[in-house]
Structure formats: structure tokens, C-alpha cells
Image (cartoon, rainbow, N blue to C red; front, side):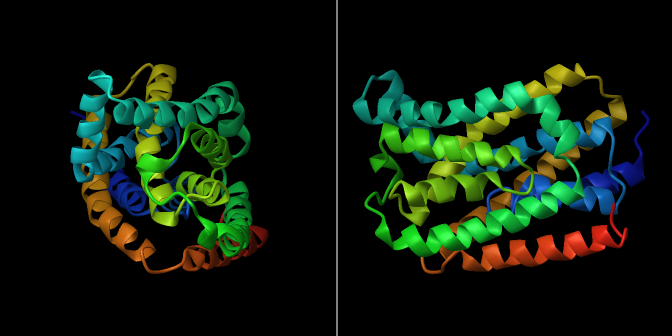
Length: 274
């Protein structure tokens, strides 16, 4: 078996980055691209790895919210209105990004997966977060995921399309969409968690289809290790993030994004990071 220890160590670093950043509004994809460039974790396998390990983070959501997810699935198959509404909302919100992601996937990979566009995305997303939070955060009328309606779901799904730009952040985009639609921060965040399930499964399936699952034995072991690390780290992060949102504003994440984005642009300008 051609297990490359250096590749495994780099993969573990990227998996830790994924676990920390997947559900907080600072862009997991953007951070993986940046860190990947720093540690020279690049190429076809690295690109596939960065998508597939997101399922590890998604598994953390399934574990933490198992009772709510399983309960809604049971209600759906029993044709109860609450279960039907919940999964209809998730599907409706999933559709816009699924369509645009499928149609533009190759162009996004070609033109947007680089530190420069990530840096700009971080800054733009950070500025938008500050503006939208200041204007809409305290004007919410929907305080729980169960109360979100189909119109709000579709609008949130449209906002998720912003996350096709690495650096914008899927969670930030959906939370901003939630704010504008009158959804509370915690409810928008939890909806973002549930919406991540079909979104990330779809992205992984598309990636595996494109690569033909052409991985060596060593690469498969590396993928499994990365999956487990991302799962464990996300498990620790998610609960703390939700607890934070119940009392604190998101501005700290926006400021972080803007500072990191500006620093990255300066480093790129002086060819320190390419």
C-alpha cells in the first residue's frame, strides 16, 4: 500500500481546518484553499479530498441533531404536515445552488479556486455581513426552524448560491439570507446546518463522479483519516458556535474575514502567497 505519511499529515491539517470552519461564517473552502497553498496540498486528489471530507463535518450535524432529523424523517413518511414542511423547505432551498453548481462547476474550479479570489470573497462577505446584520438581525419574526416557510426557504437557497464563490462561505450566505427574510440568527444557523446535508452530499457525489473514484489504496486511507478528523473537530465546534450565537453578534467573524482577506491580498501583491 502506497501510504504517504507526508500526504496524510497535510490531509489531517486540512481536515482540522474543515472541521473548524465548515459551520462558522468564514468559508471552509476558502480556508482550505489558503492553507492548501501554504502547505502545498494541491492537485486532483487534494481537490477531491477537500470536498469529500466535508461529509465528515456533515456527519457531526447528523449526530448532534439526530433526534430532530430522525423525527422529521419519520413525520415525513407518516405524511405529517410538520415533517413534509421541514423537508420540502430543505429541498426548495437546496435547488438553486444545485442547479448553478452543476452548470458552473467547471468554470468555478477554473477561475475561482485561488487565493486571490478567496481573499476578495472574504472581504466582500465580511462587509455584507456587517451591513446586513446591522440592518436586519433584530427585526426577525421567525424564531425557529419549524416556523420557516417555503418562500423564506427559497430566498435562503438563492443566497446560498453566493457560496459558489470560494471565500463567501455557505453558512454566512444562508445566515445573511435568513436575516433578510426575517429569520432569527439561531434559526437561520440551524437551517444552514440542515441545508448542508443535501448540499454537501450532492457536491461530493458530483466530485466522485467527475474523478471516477480513481484513488489509490493510500489515498483511500488518507480520505478516511481526513473524514474522521473533520467529523471529530466539527463535533466540538458546532455546539459552541450555536451557544455563542445565542448571546453574541456575528460581527467578530466579519471583522476576522476582512482582516484576513486584506492580509492575503497584501501577501499576494508582494508574491509571498501565490
